[in-house]
Image (cartoon, rainbow, N blue to C red; front, side, top):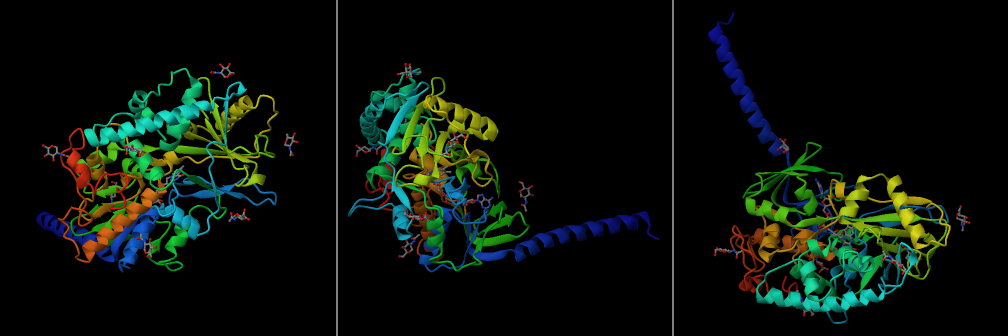
Length: 531
Ligand SMILES: Cc1cc2nc3c(=O)[nH]c(=O)nc-3n(C[C@H](O)[C@H](O)[C@H](O)COP(=O)(O)OP(=O)(O)OC[C@H]3O[C@@H](n4cnc5c(N)ncnc54)[C@H](O)[C@@H]3O)c2cc1C
Ligand SMILES: *[C@@H]1O[C@H](CO)[C@@H](O)[C@H](O)[C@H]1NC(C)=O
Ligand SMILES: *[C@@H]1O[C@H](CO)[C@@H](O)[C@H](O)[C@H]1NC(C)=O
Ligand SMILES: *[C@@H]1O[C@H](CO)[C@@H](O)[C@H](O)[C@H]1NC(C)=O
Ligand SMILES: *[C@@H]1O[C@H](CO)[C@@H](O)[C@H](O)[C@H]1NC(C)=O
Ligand SMILES: *[C@@H]1O[C@H](CO)[C@@H](O)[C@H](O)[C@H]1NC(C)=O
Ligand SMILES: *[C@@H]1O[C@H](CO)[C@@H](O)[C@H](O)[C@H]1NC(C)=O
Ligand SMILES: *[C@@H]1O[C@H](CO)[C@@H](O)[C@H](O)[C@H]1NC(C)=O
């Protein structure tokens, strides 16, 4: 028999036992985590580039942890429709073009290098192969495209002056207006042209985009490499280049690649990082490189512990994640002009309502496919991604019938679109810089927090939004960590390409001129050559 007092003691003893048991359990769990030197969170372009950079520096002890069942991330494709033999076509849901190729003797876009190396089928996108429409059918307002482009060159120059004079950013809307581009609110042809020239690239309107960094980004890709965009239609999928490049340093079924692995929690300190997965397993690493999209970070899809310092969280919320939605249709015949690549539609009421149509039946693409697709972005993306396929198909078909009032257009034989805004491993398509941005704000997005590093499309100051931005950023994070591991840099050395990345606790309204030069020389021509 126990006295009451005895019961109390027993309870205390039991409690102590449970307590130390749970501490032991945590320690055991930690001890059972798979150990590695560098954990790479995400196997998209940035993750694969980071792993390759580590390999190149003879660091072979890394693990790539990837949500999906394949490498490639936002370079993602799916089956669609049927070819004449009944086999499905492959269409790209995410990245589509190699943007900016290269010029003889000049710098080359690394994605273009891969496209050639891995024999990717792609075709020059001819943006002058375009017909213009409105709600009454074909109407030629294509000369407005030249008007925009002439004024845009002046705007880009003015953005360059702002950049070097006082660093004070503004909306691309005001920058374009100062250069003379002022479309009236009810001038729907000009609104459609502006959408084609701006929103289609940035996934946001000029009102929602940084003037300085929008123009600088455009310069860095299209002035530095070339102004060409090649559309990838390879039936093996665009992510072939990522998988093939990975195969140069990974074995088949390499145990260092963990596919179908959903990361739920990450804890980080100055000593290392522990990554917890949905299946209950974990990885413990000396360093980690987080390549999640900005959308994943903004949606708290993964829990970070401790929570990010204010400067980091502010940067994550400051930048914008855009959505770009391609809506695919296959018909039993190609009823639209066969030799034309693009069709621009100006809706009489809504700017950005099913504006850009792209034919895969055009010469040089897949002529027998009878596939056409229309792209929407931003608010129109959210709207169509929230509604049913049936409703969207109805709206899209109504637009096509307005564009071709004399034709009897049948319903499509296949219809499909992805919902990027709610995809749990992306939460959007690609990032954009909002107005009134500074370089320091972006350095805070890019900076590491303790041993947790960040890389991806969004952390690229020069190439945000682009696949090549993801590649440069993955490489940079891998190289820097390799130098730290090799004792070649002190972590406190935040200058140049050594040590931790720089961050700012205190931000001011503009980028001080001196800091552009500190940022490895903010000269568009030498910006990345110094990386
Ligand atoms: C619709 C669309 C069109 C585009 N068009 C172009 C274009 O034409 N040209 C161009 O250059 N770029 C384009 N882009 C942008 C380009 O695709 C991206 O810049 C690039 O693919 C980003 O690579 P990344 O490695 O930074 O990120 P990601 O590819 O997103 O890689 C991050 C990886 O992290 C994984 N992940 C996320 N959450 C978790 C988790 N919880 N656990 C484990 N893993 C996780 C993801 O699955 C993903 O594989 C487009 C993108 C989209 C979506
Ligand atoms: C790794 O080295 C190879 C061979 O030199 C090179 O082609 C590749 O670009 C390098 N990768 C990275 C990420 O630096
Ligand atoms: C963009 O390029 C033009 C032409 O080279 C240049 O005059 C301008 O300064 C650049 N603008 C920015 C913001 O980099
Ligand atoms: C690549 O293009 C060639 C020539 O058009 C075609 O024959 C081949 O089937 C294509 N291959 C893939 C994988 O798309
Ligand atoms: C993971 O994060 C969730 C949500 O923040 C939290 O409830 C849970 O306790 C965390 N688990 C671990 C192992 O840290
Ligand atoms: C496509 O379908 C429409 C409507 O059913 C039909 O009138 C037309 O002849 C078909 N075209 C081809 C090439 O079969
Ligand atoms: C569409 O084009 C027709 C023919 O040029 C024109 O009469 C009509 O006003 C245009 N619609 C709008 C909304 O501008
Ligand atoms: C902003 O100004 C403060 C005070 O002058 C300074 O300490 C800080 O470094 C500045 N921040 C940036 C990003 O320049």
